[in-house]
Length: 255
Ligand code: 8X3
Image 1 (cartoon, rainbow, N blue to C red):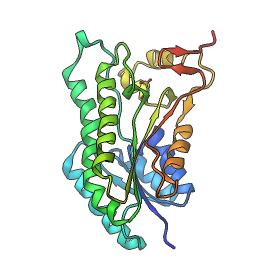
Image 2 (cartoon, rainbow, N blue to C red):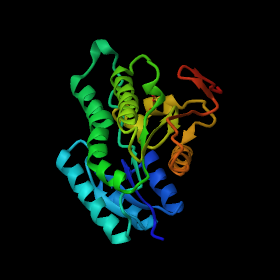
Image 3 (cartoon, rainbow, N blue to C red):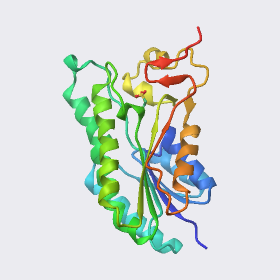
Image 4 (cartoon, helix red, strand yellow):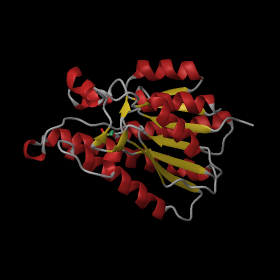
């Protein structure tokens, strides 16, 4: 039997790269999609997958991804795409609403919401054709609550959550599951650094004193579990946090 086929967006680093590796280890042929060619090419070589350079915010780039997925499904003898992990996303800036930067807010909405919609829309025919597709959106605890300085990101991640919920309703009679994994504090190389525009000190402060924040592999483990349940089992939402983070503001820090 041929390997099931999965697409992971934002696969060049962090949760996306860890998820691509994990799904590869679980026997999937993984399409590693991201903007940074060198990174996705190295990853695809490492896990025996396929690299596709893709910017999820660009409709043409997403169409090219879908075309490559169709081609690949044919090449490896699958009727369609089994899994898409909509992981591409991010936080840009940390200003309070009163000092909000419209460009940063637009960019966050663009990648966390519109990008997810574009990829889902483009890959949906193939997911349906597989007879048992899974869409797993990477949300966030930021899509469940509010926190100071986070509004541009929390608004976008609430968008991720609501789009996921809407899609599940719209696809209720289709052979496609719609799931969300919503992580809390995950220490990756880039997330906080990008949010704080390269300020390593601010980025490090997020995790200060937390003995064991989640790492990308913990979230990849949750995603792998969600997408490998039997086809009649839909995990609507899975919220995952480190033990030290009882709630967004309730973090056990050792000094
Ligand atoms: C990342 C989690 O706590 O930075 O999505 O909002 S948090």
